Image (tube, rainbow, N blue to C red; front, side):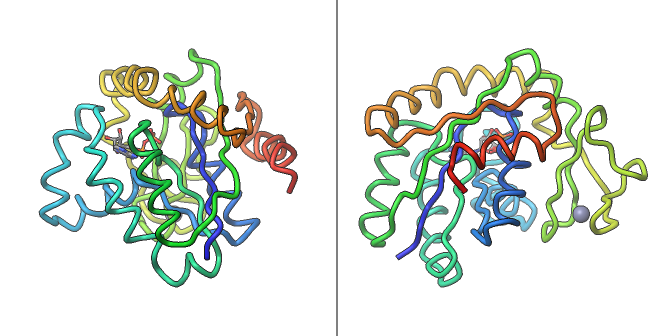
Length: 220
Ligand code: ADP
Ligand code: ZN
């Protein structure tokens, strides 16, 4: 049996950054579906080739593909032992229904669903100034305006090069925000109706301060 946490929120709200802090503090394992998909593309698998164009456009990958990736990942022993944070899944109501079934079949439980909200104007700025560590065992996230690395283009934590995700361009980011409103925002009332939703707001204060607020909401 594993304890599963879910973070929902628009792209750029800080799910990845707050997820990193949460997992570091609690020992829960961070599973980002966006990262699982980027790993497939980097490894040049058939699945990676199949999803490449969809991701580049800012649209969502099919529910079946993502659900399968999640199902396989959360069945592993490390997650059974430590639990996991699902960052970026579910992203649609059908995915939420699929997750319900995956949890039932795996005898896992939902520990909490956290909605991370943020001001719409801030999101666009954050997305287009985001930089990622290229070392996939590190995965640190920076921001060239608010969260600069000590040396430009280099990760503070591991020394690897930083890069800008191709889907963080203005055009793709605009589409991702629209896709969030249309396809993911309905999950808010979905989990609210189940009495499972906890809300926190991410502002332009430091990630640590945003995390502290979220930890209060989670009661940890
Ligand atoms: P962000 O957190 O910035 O929105 P992610 O890294 O979570 O970005 O996702 C990047 C891209 O990967 C998405 O735009 C989408 O194409 C795909 N993706 C990630 N998670 C899912 C999901 N649960 N369902 C469908 N597509 C997904
Ligand atoms: Zn790094």
